[in-house]
Length: 283
Image 1 (cartoon, rainbow, N blue to C red):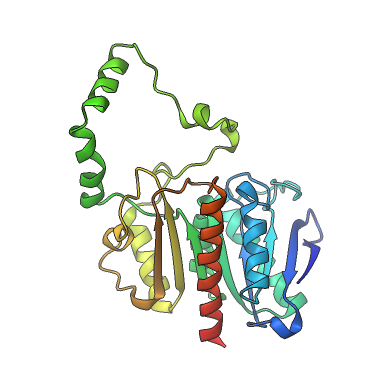
Image 2: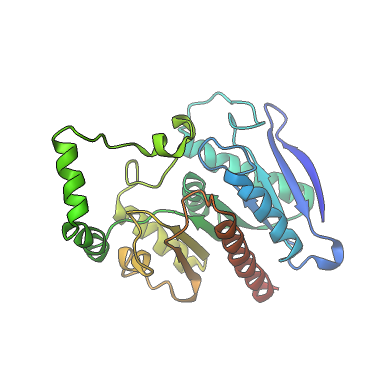
């Protein structure tokens, strides 16, 4: 495995790290995995997840990986422009793909992202057919009647929860925010939620277009109040007939940032195996 720092673009370049397998262990010479930032976290990822995953994909699955910082994050200087952050992210991923195509002759890309990185992966896949697969951790999904039932029914029957509710209403107990509990600065705190999500029908139509195109999709969901059962994604986006294009992993006991080493290791292993199988089928 060989790693090297690379600059993408001449004016205010995007900074990234290319990780390449040894020539005799390159299972997909024309394919690269690009790992995207989550929120404003540096390209190493939360708990060094992106570094660990990139190296695992290169060493175990035999694919080149490129982890980089969007402009204004980590080592990449901020760029001025009129695009929204969402639009700029798609443009910058495409800039990276163009650079890697010219530099290393890759022409197929797998995009990986956690939360906002997952959203950028989805949007870029819609815009660029060079994207053949996405790996999305806590990507877009919405509540269903079943998830509402599974989430709220136990709470309605819980006496301790009713007690906590009454104490809060009486002003005897303050509800702590996730920021206070985690100890993470609020500007770095990114959790899944529906605020700012596009309409469900819009995402459903986008997923149908990607599925019809044959895009391979791996979704990994962790423990939160929004995703509460294994098949929620498929129920949410019916009647899209995903078939073999879709793989769902649900880890209800894992945190959004995979703070526990055992959870992190297990998810990295699952993603690496999925990518390795995809590379073998495509070769």
